Image (cartoon, rainbow, N blue to C red):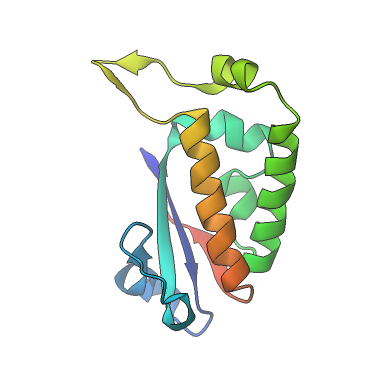
Length: 130
């Protein structure tokens, strides 16, 4: 399972969001013309997101992009205060069949991508639809 987070223009009907938002890895630098962005990440790091108050379902869903960017900035500041080795020990999922589904480091990168997009579109809506 994974989180399906959408950041999109307020004039787009909620039932059309998945049809118009671009995947986070397919966007270009043309942020100004973007209708919205789709961000996906594994549930395996849900405890980390919850601990730092940026759980997509519980914390981010229903806020404006500006609010979400602020929440992520606060979380990243708190994460920077922590020992990375300890965070990895606490939250990195185990390797299964030679693959690790998510990590603290990749979760941080994911949050930064969301924050950066939200900063460029502060009035957009943020919803989680997994």
